[in-house]
Each structure stands twice: as C-alpha cells, then as structure tokens.
Length: 306
Image (cartoon, rainbow, N blue to C red; front, side, top):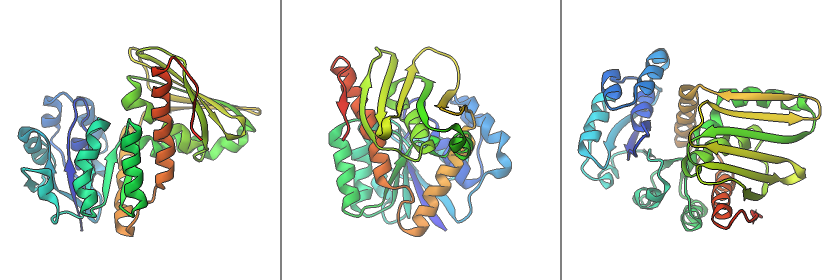
C-alpha cells in the first residue's frame, strides 16, 4: 500500500478534497458543499461507484489552516493531521502538493525533494524562470518530480487524438476558456500540447489585454495556435482543430475522469520508481506559460522559446 501525504490548499481550489476522495474512496458531501464547493460534491456523488484507487491511500494531510486540515481528514477519513508539512517525511511514500499558486511551490516542495520523496505538484509548476530552473535542476539530479494539468488526461482530447490524422495537415488550433492566464493558461496548453503529441513550441506572443488574454504560439512545421482566456465569459474549456481535410472540436466537461486518470498515472509512477510523464514535456508547457506573460509585460513582444 502506497502511503500518500497531501499538502496545501489555495483559495478556490478544492483539489485536496476531491483528490483525497478519489484515492481513499470516501467523502463527506455536506462538508465539501458547506465550504463553497457544491460542484465538487456533485461530481464525486455522480461517480461514487468508481471512487477508491487500489494499492494507495492518503494517510497524512497538512494545510496552512488546521481547521481545513481537519475538515479534509474528516471528509476522506485520513488518519493523520500533522502540525508541519515536514512531519510527513519518513511516514509517507509520496506527496501531492495540491496548491495551484506557483509562488508557493518551491518552498513547499523543497523538503520532500531533498528527502528523495516522490512528489506531484499541481499546475502550474512555476510562473518564473528562476522557479522553473530550480525544478529543472532537481529533475536533472534524479529527483522524482511530476507536474501537469489534469487536462493532459481529458477524455475529450483523447477522442480527438484518435481522429487527428483524418483532418489532414493541421493549420490552426484555437483554445478558449475563462479565468486568468497565471493559473488557467496551463490548462488549455496542456490539453493542446498532449492532443498534438507535444510539439516543440518555437515562439509565443501575447496580443490581448488585462483579463482578456489572447496568446499566439508558433510550433515547428508552421502550425499556429491561439489561446483565449477571458475572465468574465461563460462556457466550458474548448479546443478546435482545423486541418486541410476536416475539423473537430473538444469541449472539456468531465473533470472527475481527468483527475482520476491523473492520480492513477502518479501512483503508477511511484510504483515504477520514476515519473511516467517526461519532465521535458512539462518544461515546454511551463516555458510557454512564462513566455506569454513576459510578452504581455513587454507590450506584446514575440518571445523566442528555442
């Protein structure tokens, strides 16, 4: 049995609740809803027959607020609430860092990387070149580090992936979603990159404005993609693929399925002793995220990603 510690919770992100429930197979819907996440309770209830992953269990939890730690432990029957995140070292086989605010990732991941404990870090891994360089150096030194948006495992994108050859030569991909670039740009990039088998990005340019992000990406072989994130629009995450022989659209709705598959891949990675997701793929996406923001801060200058 792989013992997992889950650490951190950031505002508006209920991953510690949902991911613990998916692994441990139990949740308190009333508790989750009372904290402002009724949608999480709803999708866990709708999928309750598939909750619980074999050979793994969340056994320890730590959040900045003890009350939140106790709440997560109550919801998913987690045995140990620790006073400090470092208290998990020597007691767990792997750690999930469930905060999605990247400025906190280095200090929270560092104790576990130094202790040689496998860690999954929620998206986006980093939002600065310095932080990305730190994680890159940890990977090069042989540390077990995995990070991605769960949209890498979205079933809707995998369906498109099986049909992509029928579209002929791809000329354009568009991706649309809501909220901000810092935390949500990585979602659309992860879905876009994995559906296209992780092409190499050559350059990126931000041509939008505050709360209306429009990002253009140039890939090898001339393919271009545009990513649109508007803070106040309604709708789901959508990607459209346009080729010389046809087109397809992916409307990503099934959050539960992609979360579950992401967790399965992390647990399989721990069992095998190395991340099944190559760090280079994560690095390319995070460089694109950072490059787009650098372009925004420099009046839309084209940023080379070579």
